[in-house]
Length: 313
Ligand code: BDR
Ligand code: CA
Image (cartoon, rainbow, N blue to C red; front, side):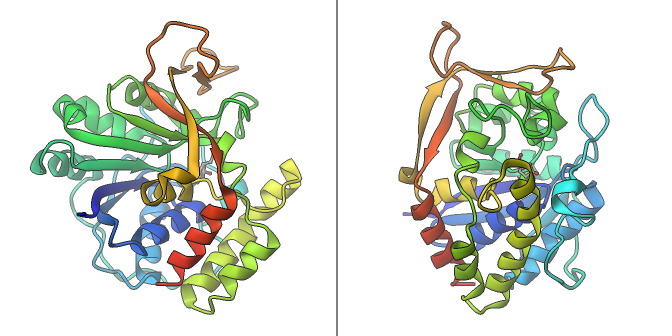
């Protein structure tokens, strides 16, 4: 089978970094056409820097990295240095990237790539706020029908919120963008906190990364060690939740995940619940299903896959 053509849209972030590394470690299944960066965990200049540092860590300076939108559609940018550190990628000491940032805007790259490929062959993998994706869909509505799928990390139902009591970070940062993406009619797979809070890096799993003994394995161990402190303190959890790698793992091993095909709407009016993902998990409305909203993960299967693949880099 041909590898699946994807674009990763991202705001690295340590967990974004691991998601990118997992994709780069899986060329038989994933053809990574480019990485588009967005403002989120940290401002755009840093996410565009961090994405290139990760490509270089993986020995892939040939990957095309694009900078996109530097702020949400209708709100001021909210960042998450309190989770990811000042650079967004605190933990390992990595060299400043040498590879260039592409001159084209990320949104133009997304539009051109979807139009240049046969319908149904491109999958978008957003790992941050949905600003670039919504902007591309608004500027070129024809691309919606040409996409194979959007597989994203964002939202929550049972876990409710992490950045506010009601909202998950990626959706909260740009709720207007999220609303547009969830209404676009594109097949959607959603990895909410309900899944990602079960994908925890325990001490044993972290040791498995470190014991790979490679620059990638050691850097991943250092990254997850850095950002686990936040979730340990807040939730008392065992370690860092690997939110974004759930997206790339789904492309490789969808059987590790299960959920429900339900209606998901985004709250954009109420300041109190801004960015809430109102998932009709119990199917109590007749609103049409628009997303495969995941709820469960085989966490050990996920970490086994991740560790085996990282060993290839
Ligand atoms: C999401 O927000 C970011 O902090 C992480 O990278 C992930 O994409 C989790 O809420
Ligand atoms: Ca992210």
